[in-house]
Each structure stands twice: as structure tokens, then as C-alpha cells.
Amino acid sequence: MIEISNVTHRFGNKRGAAAPANVLENVSFTIADGEFVSFLGPSGCGKTTMLRIIDGIILPSMGNVTIDGTHVRGPAPSRSMVFQEFNLLPWRSAEKNAEFGLELEIQKTKRADRERIAEENLSKLGLKSFGGYFPHQLSGGMKQRVGIARALSTAPKYLLMDEPFGALDPMIRELMQIELLKLLSADNRTIVFVTHSIDEAIFLSDRIFVFGARPGRILDIVPVDLPKPRWVDDEKIKASAPFVAYRQRIWRLMKDELQRGMQHAD
Ligand SMILES: Nc1ncnc2c1ncn2[C@@H]1O[C@H](COP(=O)(O)OP(=O)(O)OP(=O)(O)O)[C@@H](O)[C@H]1O
Ligand SMILES: [Mg+2]
Image 1: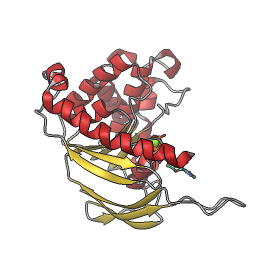
Image 2: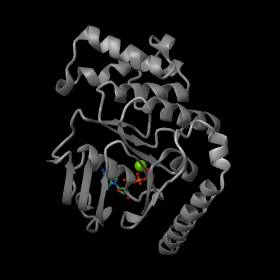
Image 3: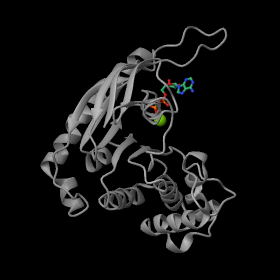
Image 4: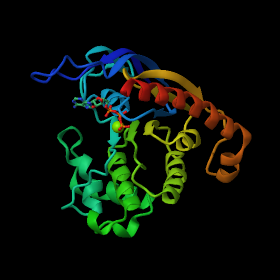
């Protein structure tokens, strides 16, 4: 379980600059094991920062982050990130990229096991015969799948995904959403997923945390009560009255927040 209480964060003072503002202010929530939660909100509202705080790469200025009862002081193998950019190492093949997490000191794994795990994960993601390809030989969707295979290599309990499908074309993106849900259905992982897409958040999530900006904070938490598994009848679900109602409710919240932000920008 992820427990965030009263987290406030500001980045360090730059020389000569005005005192930095809070990027996140007084954010509190809990995420239960096995939940799929999305962070949705305007650019710059602190979604990536919040994800990094959960991962332990950033320690918050104030407040508490507890995961499975333990205070977070840094990254741990139970948590893996899929990055906003693909972040693959261009000089490594797909298979070698997918092994990467297993070479790190905290999760050092024998070579044969690394290769087997990378192969299994690539195969689960439909890239069985692409292990030898280098990133420049792969399409955007394939690169993102290698990024997911890499994150899965350490069998993390928590998968933290920062706009993983943001760079994909809209059709591939919808297919990837379906593939992700299928992939995740095999394990009881907890997912925290950042997106700018309202429809993507509704389709994937158990709950959506809608963020507002300046300072970053949670405006509302929307539980999504749609039938599961959602990849079965995905078209029907997306056209259903409850789906459309969620979209309207969330868009209203976001629109008010964006308009407020534009007034401030003047
Ligand atoms: N390392 C850093 N040093 C200083 N400021 C930072 C740093 N990282 C982020 N910020 C600032 O913190 C705020 C929140 O950034 P963050 O990346 O968390 O936003 P976001 O919601 O993920 O945005 P986007 O949707 O565009 O990815 C922004 O104003 C950004 O400029
Ligand atoms: Mg971001």
C-alpha cells in the first residue's frame, strides 16, 4: 500500500532567482494493493514530481511517504518506472535493454537468468523475434514496449508509468492500452499511471486523481465503476453512457482549472 500524507515539495533555490514556489502542496492519498490509479492534470502541475516522490528518486520537502509500512528514503526494487520518453540505451539491443534493471547492484542477477527474463518479457509484449533489434530499428510503439519489458524485469510490485503512451499515434495508443490491461491481468500489480488523456485514464483506471496546478494539488478523486476486464467489449465500454458521463465530469473539472490557469498567466 502507498500512503502519502501532507506532501509538499519545492525544488531548490536557484542563485539570484526569486524563492521557488511549491510544486506540490499538501497532497495526501492512499493507493491500495492491486489498484490502477491515474494522475491526470495540466502540464506542470507536478504529476512527474509526485511519481518520482513515490519512486523515491525525489524526497519531498515536507510530509510522509510510506510504502508497505516503510518510510521511503530512496528507490527500491519493488518499484519500477516507465519513463515519459522511452529512455532506451541506443547502443543496446532490445534484449539488452530489457535486461538492464537486472544488472544494477540492487538486483544483480546471473547472466543466464537475465537473458531468460528479458526474453520472457519481450515475448509477453509481442516482441519475441525483435530481441536483437536496436532502438533505431524499432517503431515508437515497439520502443515503448521494450521500456515496459525493462520495467517488468525486476518483477516490481509497483509499476510507475509516466505518460508511457504519450508519444504514440492515437490508434496504436488505443491498442497499447488494451495490451497493457491484458498484460497486467496476469499479476496483481499496483499501477500509478500519468496521462493527459481523459479517455485513457477512464479506460484504464480504478480511480483517477485529477490534479490542479499552481500549486500542484488534488482537485478530485474519481472512482471509475466500469465493467472489467475492459479489453473485452472495449468499443462498447467507450461508447457507454457511464463512460461519457465520466468524460464530461472530468473535462468540466479540467476546463475550470485550465481557464483559471490562463487568467493567472496574464
Ligand atoms: N528538477 C527540477 N528543478 C526545478 N524545477 C523542477 C524540476 N522538475 C520539475 N520542476 C518544476 O516543477 C513543476 C512540475 O513539474 P512536473 O514535471 O512534475 O510536471 P508534470 O505535471 O509532470 O508536467 P507534464 O504534464 O508537462 O509532464 C514545473 O513547474 C517544473 O518546471
Ligand atoms: Mg510529466
